[in-house]
Length: 223
Image (cartoon, rainbow, N blue to C red; front, top):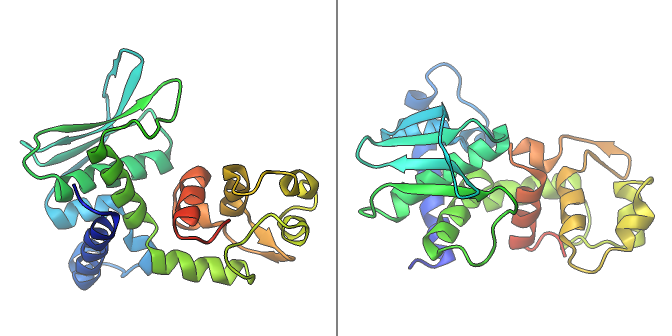
């Protein structure tokens, strides 16, 4: 079992190594740092095959979102999910490759009727956290957050904040309970604040609004 600090360090080490080897991974144009948080590029760096549009099956009401095929050094990704979910699944499988060597082939399942929960095996939770750290590194997220929301952290659903997020939905957002995930999702997907327009944090890091909302809460940026 690894601590979350150790898992974050592994994600940071991978990103640092990819940045150092950027000229080989991206021979034509060196991308901005948040574009380096790319599971497909990570597979190239690690010598893994990246196989999207794989026709993974459904077993007992659970769809297989991705698979790490250790024997063939391959990451297989189901096409039956959004682009953002495919990225998260790929990063999750890369997490297994780095964090859980010797455990054989591993699957990432997604229940057809729910989004999973705390009952998932520890190794799956660890791979999920690795994916979050790789796709949305703390330093980059904090910088992007501060550029969009010049408020004291953590941002909470006060009347002023909710009005600046959405005049149309301000009253509803303000009425949400403290610590509401729904409010965090609104922040993650926001494209303007206090009259300033920008690319949402979810779009910037190419993750779903819910995944970004959870990440913002993990980093203490949303209360």
